[in-house]
Amino acid sequence: MVKTNTFLLNLMSSPGSGKTTTLLQTIKLIKDTFRIGVLEADIDSDVDAKKIAATGVKAIQLHTGGMCHLDAKLTKQGLDEIGTEDIDIAVLENVGNLVCPASFDTGAIKNVMILSVPEGDDKPLKYPKMFKICDALIVNKIDTMSVFDFDMKLLKERVTKLNPKMKVFPISAKTGEGVRAWVDWLSEQAESVIK
Ligand SMILES: Nc1nc2c(ncn2[C@@H]2O[C@H](COP(=O)(O)OP(=O)(O)O)[C@@H](O)[C@H]2O)c(=O)[nH]1
Ligand SMILES: [Mg+2]
Image 1 (cartoon, rainbow, N blue to C red):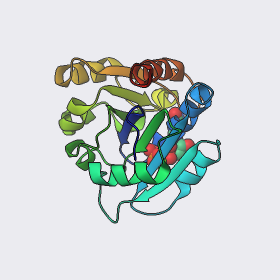
Image 2: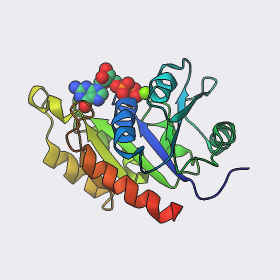
Image 3: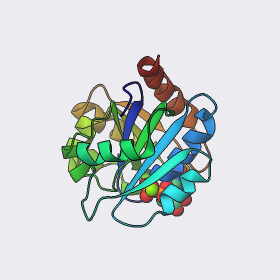
């Protein structure tokens, strides 16, 4: 039986934007405050689940059987498997893809996406649906700004046009810069559900 006061977060991005690295940084900052569980969705392999489990938090790998996204049924199966009785924040690391996951409701309370600097500031123009359905946008890899033509101001304008309520958190999951602001927002969202 899935208990109802677990905060479920759906984390989406293109492959390689930094979902797992951002989760590792996030776990470091909140694992003493919240009990965390991570559902790693991939078409194959369990490398990400192993990386997360090495931090000491609960982690399982979900194989989507070739599907390019998670849906509510698979998510429910994953939550049943991991067991949410001792989890305050459950995170779905969705399949790397900016298209399909935007069209499926996983049942998560908040949808968050990561866009990394090397992907470019034009992605809201190309994948508007993903930017419309998310509550927060993490702009990762800001440590690489100097080698990419990435205009943060222009990105924010493009995002606001599609989704005026979107919170934007520029971070480097590598150096830890900006991660605190993202973690504070996540903690606030989670506390409102857990308490
Ligand atoms: N320079 C830099 N590299 C990063 C950052 N975050 C992740 N990476 C690297 O990007 C690659 C993909 O990261 P990963 O977390 O596996 O992405 P995922 O596929 O979205 O889970 C790895 O080589 C990471 O080390 C960052 O903030 N800065
Ligand atoms: Mg990953």
